[in-house]
Amino acid sequence: MGWPTKGSGHNYNSNTGFASFVGAYTKKVILSKIYCRRCRLCEDSKRKNKPIREHKCVQNYPSNKSSKSMEAVAIVDMRNFMMCALFLADPSHRIKSVSKHFYDLANKRVGESTISKSIAKRMKKNWGYMLRQNRNSTLDEFIQKAKAPLEHLFQNHQYCSKEWCDALKARQENKTYTHPDGFYNKNTPAGQKMYSQLSAITAKY
Image 1 (cartoon, one colour):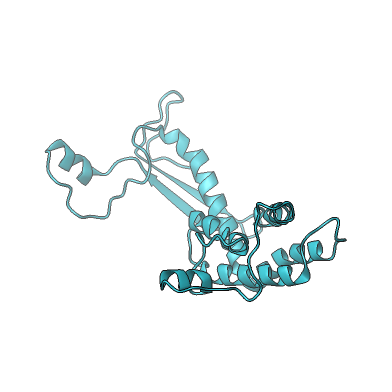
Image 2 (cartoon, helix red, strand yellow):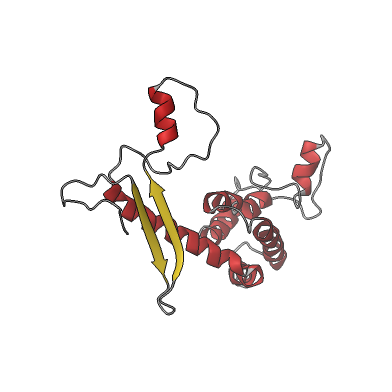
C-alpha cells in the first residue's frame, strides 16, 4: 500500500492511496486499487451551496476515515475480487465442483439424506443457469443470485431470473405455473433436512 503523503506515525491524512496485488509466481501486478477520500468538485459545490453537476466523482472512500485504514480495506477488496474472478473463470469446472456434493448426498442412505438423484440433477442444472448468467456480476450481486438455485427448489423465486425460471416468468405474466417435478416445503421435517443439507453446500460457493 502506498500514499502520496508520508505518514508521521501518528497522523495519516493523505487524501489518496493505492494498492497492488502481486502474483506469487509471476511477481507481476495482476490487480490494483486506488482510493480517494475527497472530490474537489463536490466539496466546492457544497461550500458554495450550489447543486452538484453531473460528473465522474473520484471519491470512493469515506472522508472521515484515516488513510491508514485503506490498507486493510484494499486487501479485502482485492481478495474478494480475485476469489470471484477465479470462481467465474471456468463455469463448467465450477458447476462440476459444486454438483459433485449434490450427488454425494444423493448416494447416501435414505436415513442420512433426503436428496434424490433427480434433485441433485435439478440443483446442478439450476446452478449452471445461475452461474452463466452472472459471470459479469459484482461479488455482492453474485452472492445474492447464488441463493436462487436452492430457494427456487422450495418455491421462493425472489433471487431467480425469468430467463431460466418459468415460475417467475409466469408470475410476472399473471399466469399459473406447475413445475413438472413440483416444489418442496422446508416447513416439513423432510424439507427442513433437505434445505439444511443443500444450503451447507451452496453457502460455501
